[in-house]
Image (tube, rainbow, N blue to C red; front, side):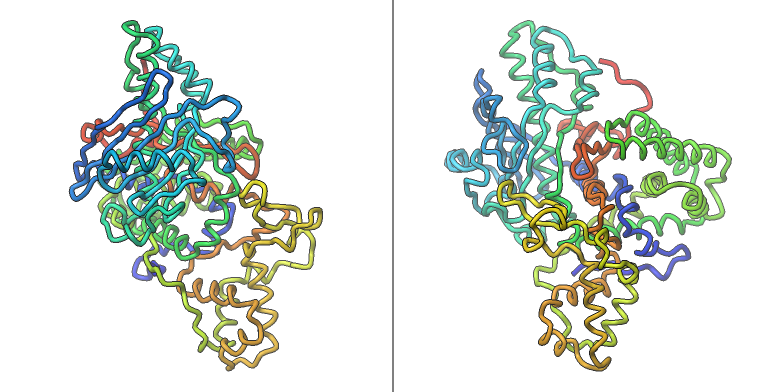
Length: 568
């Protein structure tokens, strides 16, 4: 178990879990240097990874396969892509879909012809197929039909795509699932955890998406060339770079944060440690201040071009833009070079701004300090394969102390009130996805998933009141095994203070998109676009360098839009 404890050796302490782990705060996180996409592109650049495309056999109907290889200093990973001619009536982003425009697997090594034949019989089937430990991930993607046709048609006619069209969508394909960690028979996390390039979380999945982006660009160009012949033109590199891979994410992702408490702790703890390290710097150099100010200006631009039609996000964007204006005025007048400048700036922001701007500032403060921050990325995984064992020797009294220290917020909730337990998490038999239902309006209570740790902690606390303080908790659990999972969580939180969301996850005012945004910010997503309070759209690797551009890319700051306009 990789647990980063609160740093007590610095003047500015890591923020308290009671502050950070509230859903309103988690739902305001932004990408940072520690986000998994940036960790990957930084490593690829620093280690001089090379890339090749040994196979691209796709016909004029857009059917065939291609192989994209990433060559690390020690091994090769290969994305095998299968292109399909998908009828419009079969195109669906739902997990229960049975056909897609393209399907993929990330292969450990360089596939042989026999490997490709075997995978061709399984990968396009996704859940209905099976792969082996030679495969590290399985994924699929669908075209953004309108933009795809626009780009292909314009290139075929000898013209570049319309920038407004490109910017309104941002991607030519969107993934509907990227499966790793043993899904469908693929290699388990334990098979890869000791590889340096897999030390940070989700690096295999991010590599799959990174290579998929190259495939999508190449496929669009290939189809345009076939359609237009000699008249076709090559997609402008700047326009190509502006497009990422889309993704629609719903409730299926939300329970992840509750079900992986140690992993969640390690993510949050690494970020909070990074923030504390920067806040404790006594001075800042002129170059560091210049980097921060440049990226702050680019963040203001990012907020201004970030659009959403959903009322919740519209309100958040309005507040974010207003707060960034206030922050800009404060920065202009502040001394950012001496007298613990980042600590002073953060204290002011925390007192005067709302969470979205505070978390934006927190991410920006890390940017000039790669040497100080980046090593923390390798501490963000949970590499302990063994399940967390309950300490049965712990006394009832000791457990009560843990509960009162870490779940006081849950004790303050009246769990008998309908509003407090209005929702219930369950898995839909029809859709095969997690769902959030109305407990008192639907017959779902008996199918409820254990995703209400606050309610369960309060129930455990009440049950313990009848037990003698010095009795070992093992005796209590023999009589009340229904509390085992809550005892385990409480003992985890005692060691991993950021392991628990400190809010009601079944209340009537729950916004699941806060949980989604938290997780996706660690992936490195930007411009979150909620379509309801339960699902949103994002874009991955937008503005990132392509494989052939990694070594010529000037910086690690690709998530921030350029201040100058992009011209075709």
